[in-house]
Length: 155
Image (cartoon, rainbow, N blue to C red; front, side, top):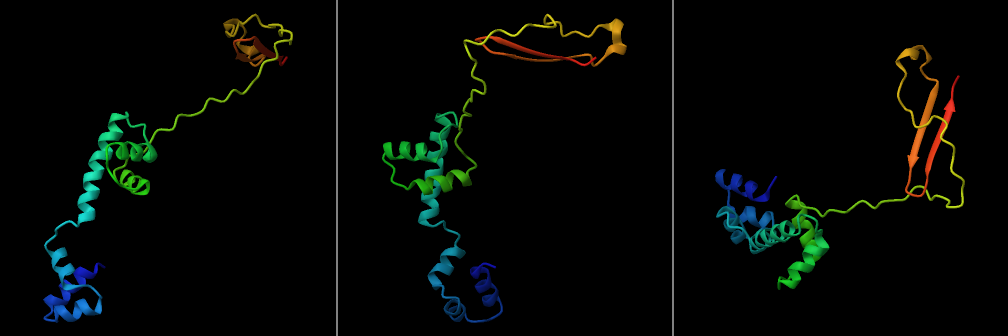
């Protein structure tokens, strides 16, 4: 429960506002400022920075993360921390794009002999021999250096 709503309830129950604020260790001016619903300086600054962060993030086609957005804000003369930028980006639902790294899984041996193509690259099913299904298994991995075809007849 928010302490300000508790103070409001105490005030409505004919209790002393001063005493409720003293018990909760809240200044009366803070209670009245909350009651007036005026955003604090930090909230106003956060709203201003969020607008600039969204602008920079959109200019980068939504690829920049908080370090780059922070760097761009610093270049534009804004003073704020990277952690604040990260917090505001999270609150705005913005995040950077990290490209996936392509990993080469097979390194071909240039001195290796080419494998024979035992099925002549005929991967079609013969409609006359539907009873002979599961007789030709193939796997094809093609790279630029050479082509590898593995065959395992099952019958």
